Length: 473
Image (cartoon, rainbow, N blue to C red; front, side, top):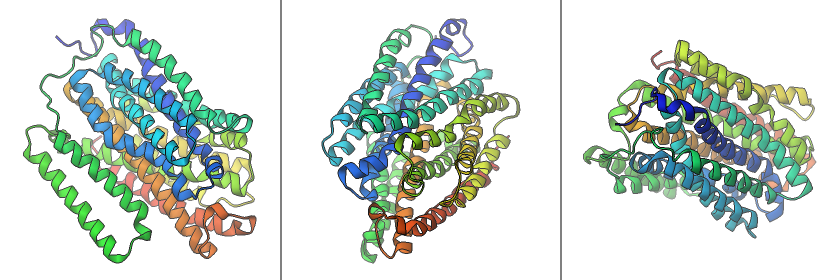
C-alpha cells in the first residue's frame, strides 16, 4: 500500500528529500534571475532589439508553460522522482548548449532544452514535498522551499553580474551545469529509496489530443500577442477568431473524453481555480519588474553588471525571512488573508516603482524592490499549500504541474507584456525610436515609458488581490 505523508518511513528521508527539491528550485530560479540581468549584455553582443532578445526569456517560459501539464501527468504515471531526475539532466544539457551558442537563434533554441528540464523539475517538486511532509506541515515545507527560491533569486543576479563583468554572459550558463550535476548525483541516490514517495497512479490515461490542443493554444496566444502591433486589422480579426476556436475545441475536448489533461473535477472548487488564477497574475506582475529594472539600472543609473546584480538582490532578500513565516502562518490561519495581503503589497510596490527617476538613490530603489519581494513571498507559500493540502495524492502530480503552469504562464505573459508595453510606450514618447538606440538625451522618454508600464502592471496586482479575497478561508 502507498505510504502516506505521516508514515514513519518518510521521517528519516524528509530533510534529505527536501534538500534535493530545494536545490532544484534554487537552480531554476538562479538561472532565471541570472538571465534577466544578462539581457542588456546579450542585446549588445548580438546587436539585436529588445523585442527579439526578450525571446531568450520568453522561449524558456513558453516551453515550460506548454509542457508542464504533460510532465505532471507523466509524474503520476511513472513516478515523481523519475521525472525530477530526468529534468535535472535535461536542464544541464540545455545550459551547456546555451553557453556555446554562436547566434541569438541558437541561444533561443537551447533555452527550449533548458525549459524542458525546468518543466520536469517544477511539475514534480511540490508533489515530492507533499509526500514527505505530514499534512499539517505542508505549509511549513513549502514555506521553507521559499528560502531556496529566495537564495536562487538572490545569488543569481550577484553571480551573473560577477561572471559577466569578469568573463561574459556565456559563463552564467556554465554555472547552471555545475549545480545540475551536483543535484543529479545526490538525487539519484536519495529519491530512489523505496517507500518514501507515493506510487505512480495506475489509472490516469494520457490525453494526447488535449495535450496537442493545449500546446497549440499557448503558442498561438504568445505569438499573437508578440506580433499584435505589427498586424493589420484583418490579421488581428483572424487571430482573435483562431484563438477563440482553439479555446472552444480545447474545452470541448476536455469535457467529452474519459481522460483529460486537466483535472476537471477539481476546477469546480473555488479554492482550486482561484489559486491558479492568482498565481498567474502574481508572477506576471513580478516578471515585468524583473525584465525592466536591469535596463533602468543600466541605461539610466549607468551601473555595471555586477552592481546591477547586487541591487536586484533586493527583490528576493525578503523571501529569506518572510517565506517560512508565511508558510507557518498558513498552517494557523489559512490562505485568504495572507494571499490577499501579499498581492496588495505588490500593488503598492508597483505604484512606488513607477515614481523612480534619474535622481533616485540606491536606498529608494532597493526598498521598493524589497517590497515587491515581500508581497510575493507572503502570497506564494499559502497559495500553493491551499491547493496541495486539500487534494488526493493521485492528483498531486497534475496539480503540481498546474500550479507551475500558472506561474510560468504568468511569467511568460509578464515578460511579453513588459517588453511589448515598454517598447510601445518608449516609441510613443521618443517619436518612434527603439530602445536599442537609446542615448542619454532620451532619459525622459525612458522614464515616462517605465512609469506608464509599471502603472499598467499595478492594475494586474490589484485585480489579483480582489480575486484572492473571494477564496475560502
